[in-house]
Image (cartoon, rainbow, N blue to C red; front, side, top):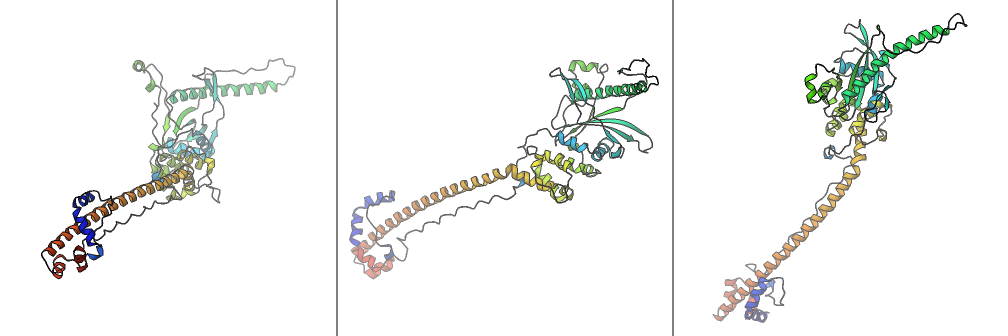
Length: 437
């Protein structure tokens, strides 16, 4: 071994090059590392431990509400559910009392009569005669505060899931036609009375001609007032003008005093305080509260979990609210009916999360796992490469130090220094000194 070391000494320049390129093996070797003691020259460095692959959390059974973006929702028409709700006279009376009479009980559910007569007008798009029904039109008895004096008012309610800037003109037409229809009701009643009188005439041979249906208004005709209302079934604000004057051309606005105006009422859930919605006499206020906060699923979810009223909602109110929470899911897709026949909106919301985002969130978790594993593997390879390079550098340095130690031993041997003194002075074993001889 010492002879080999002395040969390595003659090849110092080559050894220097090996130090610069430690990964190349020339076949030369330094003295056995086990023969070196004391200063630890020649020890093989330890390779750093490879880090473990980080754990990735498993997908939750129920998606985290805070992780679901609120803007991934489309807005189809939802006014169908408003019609169903307000066709219930209890809800209709509560709706009118809370929104039109500031919570006072002016309308009773048993004094509401729904109107079914269609409204016909010329469509501005096709110029054809269009026949339609308002979403809800009712003739209601309205009591004054003392409930001794009463009157009849006609309320027409249109549900809107999107802002319609032609609403003032639309409702003006509908209101006008309802007024005209009232004149027709007067004439129909007159005709019915005349026809009955003619049909029951005492002389069957009487040649009096059959009465004919008449049209138009008479001097004594009086009309029930029509109150047009829009309910905006959305969490946002209604931005369309509420009257005709605000939609006039700029060059027409100076003549407003000549142009008759028309306005309508609009009810937006976002403008109603939660306390007022909680003050509804029926659970309709709870459903409108859900619509109000439908742009923030975190608020809705916490609200549904903490308020027991949402555990047992009537079917039409359940549909009314859920149509705004998840408008892209059919309200018939939920399995949320309880044993008492009510509907649990909290359970339905969790089902909606699963239907919309369960597969997507699980896929995202799988992708995160794969990415984390790939990054961890890359990190392991980097650590291995760094450890290998560091070990090679330390081995090369150890070889260099060993060669230097060999030179020192030989120098002492040339001076005839005793072996014991060399071992004590340089911190090496006697066998190492013998190998260097």
